[in-house]
Length: 196
Image (cartoon, rainbow, N blue to C red; front, side, top):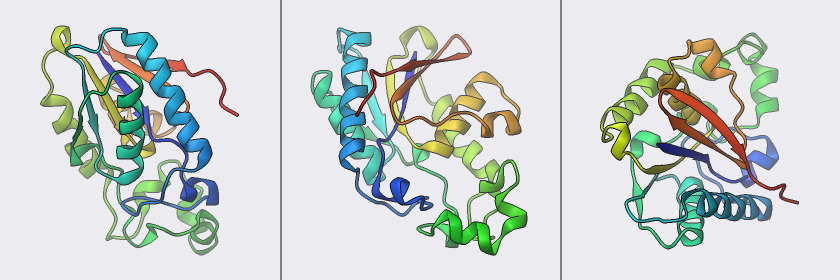
């Protein structure tokens, strides 16, 4: 099984800024979300022996993974660049409102994230690296992994795992206070207790 987590809220999330490969720290809410996810996973896993925590190397995911690891017994956090967020190229770090004003034909479309400038990452590129990570995992009976990732790359991961078409994968929720269970070809959502 895989428990998939999105990082807690960041300063850029709060400002409605595109992050991509640019980083910003977790907010106070983001820290509380990470702790709530850690408590939830501690209760779900109960015995951490045999479990691994694998995180995107970007700071917001790594910080979330370290908080989760501490809550469930101090497992070491492994970093894997294949889980990092997609890059929007020159859109990285910019306000969504700016991009929407400058590129209304792109921003309003389903799947707009992959219509970033030519220096951005493609859907196929994200699928290739996330799919490579999935293929590298042990078979399901031995698979005990907590993966800490991002909004878009997490959508792609769930979509690949469940065999969803691109449009459907791109419209999935990306909560920062829930855990997704990937098991037996299906994806289930487990919400944390509400975080104020």
